[in-house]
Amino acid sequence: LDTLLVTETVSGLSDYWAPGHECLVYDTPEQGQWLMQELLADPARLAAMKAAAKARALAEHTYALRFAAILRRLGLSGG
Image 1 (cartoon, rainbow, N blue to C red):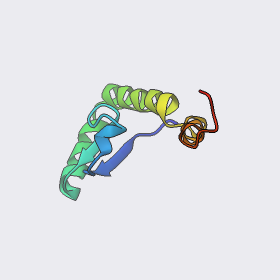
Image 2 (cartoon, one colour; image 1 turned 90 degrees about the horizontal axis):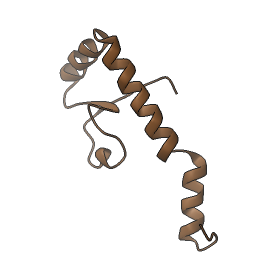
Image 3 (cartoon, helix red, strand yellow; image 1 turned 180 degrees about the vertical axis):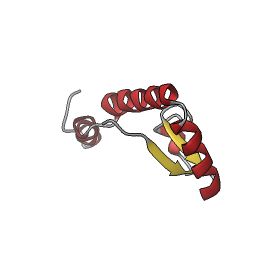
Image 4 (cartoon, rainbow, N blue to C red; image 1 turned 120 degrees about the horizontal axis):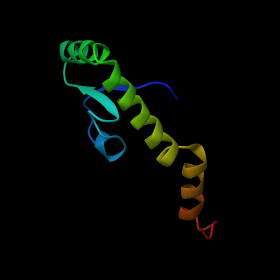
């Protein structure tokens, strides 16, 4: 999980990730290129964003967590 999500603006993304903190979001390809260049020029910020994204992924976006949520919705789990 040593990576960073870079994506165009998508409705609802902020429900799952914090743009600018856990992922890089752009509106145009040119803006995306500029933002990536800026981020690559700042290794400390890149490392912080990757660490934040990893922490969120492990805390909220694992298969185990999603499967448990499905079981709860189906009434098959007491948790």
